[in-house]
Image (cartoon, rainbow over all chains, first blue to last red; front, side, top):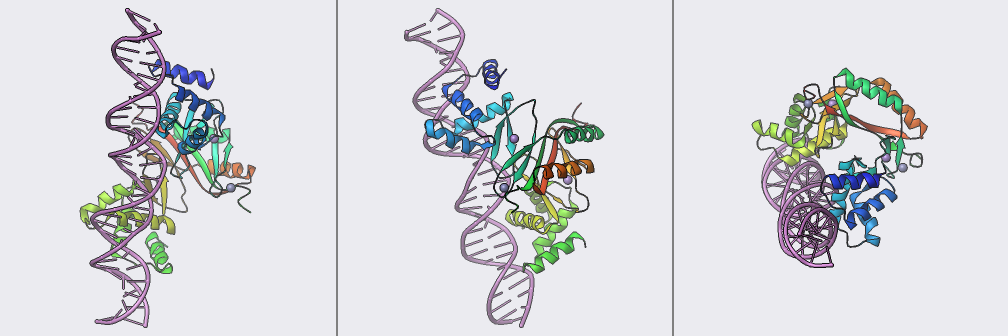
Length: 141
Length: 141
DNA sequence: TAGCTTTTGAAACTCAATTTCATTAGCGTG
DNA sequence: CACGCTAATGAAATTGAGTTTCAAAAGCTA
Ligand SMILES: [Mn+2]
Ligand SMILES: [Mn+2]
Ligand SMILES: [Zn+2]
Ligand SMILES: [Zn+2]
């Protein structure tokens, strides 16, 4: 089931409505570069849909995270960011603090060690955050 | 050299002043439970030192981070938190999303794999964030 | 102590996030 | 296809952590 279907399913089961704005935001979000903040997605939408309000974009992104088709990220720049979620392709991030570039990485051995650490403290993990901050190859001269 | 000395040294070399407020905040910060937010530390201080302002607490915590005797943490609850930094004892965190308990962990194998990942992308790491969110043993029933 | 510089604390301001509320739009029913 | 209920929308207002401002106070050096 693709992400659009998951979202529509979620709306139906929650008694929420399938609106024109939500469909446009969903489409644009899935088509856009990832790791967009609410403000950035709002600006992209404004070009073709200037009547869609900021509050609606914000509320809809929250809905995406709620129904599991997006993840909310926070790279410490004071703005939440969102990316489409691929449940079968979990990844973490390298964040360049100079140019803002975001590199995604997958390292199953780290994921495995995380599980070991959690067990060590009888801790039940729901989610995790793992980010490396520094300079990308272009920004380290 | 202990943390108080590092801080005093830092003040001197930067031409900053050794004030009564800064000394009280330092002492209280080092003696307190770790992972306090600015607001929490401010409240603790208010008991014995009601004249010290919030802005001063905030500015002083920033100074601690600047001179390397504290780290600023962010666990996604919208409030920055600070902890005394032990340069020779880096650790990461398990955060219970129910009771707020924070468990510290050290896993050198994860630190090593992080370095490998960074190399893979020619990325120069300055810092990292690694937190596992979920339920502590008391909160998983 | 004088003279200069930094600090302090209350209040104002910033800015992303969130809420409010009057109006508009879905959607199930007849 | 109306009708009527409920949820959604969007502009504006509010929140709250963080930051800045500024006049008065305090630290430092000579
Ligand atoms: Mn990503
Ligand atoms: Mn810690
Ligand atoms: Zn870069
Ligand atoms: Zn707990």
